[in-house]
Image (cartoon, rainbow, N blue to C red):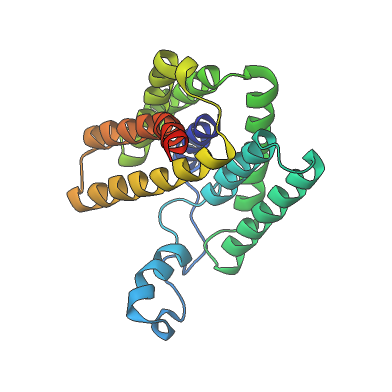
Length: 236
C-alpha cells in the first residue's frame, strides 16, 4: 500500500504543480552557506536545501504525509495513537524544514498537507486495496498529462502509476506480508535498487518516454522486493 500511496502523491504533485504554476520564494534555487561544508557533502546539501520548478503544492509536504501516514496505518508497533504521534511529528518537521530553507511559502506546505490528508483518507477508507489506489493514481497521472503536457515529471508519474497497477494485478496475491526480520532486508534491497536506478537516470539524461519506462521498472522492483526479502530472511 505504501508504494501505491507514493504513486498517488507523485501524480497529485506533478499534476497540480503544472495546473497552478505558482513560483517558489525568491532565492529558492540557491543554497545558503554551502561553502561551509566539506566538498563531499556540499552537493547533497545543495540538492536538499534548494528547490526548482513550481512550488504549489509542496511535494515534500504531500509525499511525507502520505508515506508516513501510510506507515502509521500499516505498522503494528505500539498503539495507533503512538504511531500517529510519531508520524505527525516527522511530517511537521519536514514541512517546517522547507519553510526554514526558504524553498516554499506557507501556503505551499498547508496545501500539500491538506491534499495528502484527503488522498490518504480516500485511499484507506474508500479505495482500500493497492490495486484500486494504483488505478486512482493512474487516472490522476493521465489527467495531468493532458492538462500540463508531456514532461519528464508527468512521464515519471504515469510510469509509476501504470506499472504499479499492472504489477499488483499480476503479482499482488503472491507478495507476502513483511516480517520483522524480512522488512529490514527488503528496505536495504530497496535503497540499493532505487539508488542504482536514480544514478542511471541522472547519468543518461533520458527523454520522457525513457523516464516512463525507468519509473515503471523502479516501481515493479519496489513491489516485488518483499518476495526476495522474505526469502532471504527465511534462508539466513
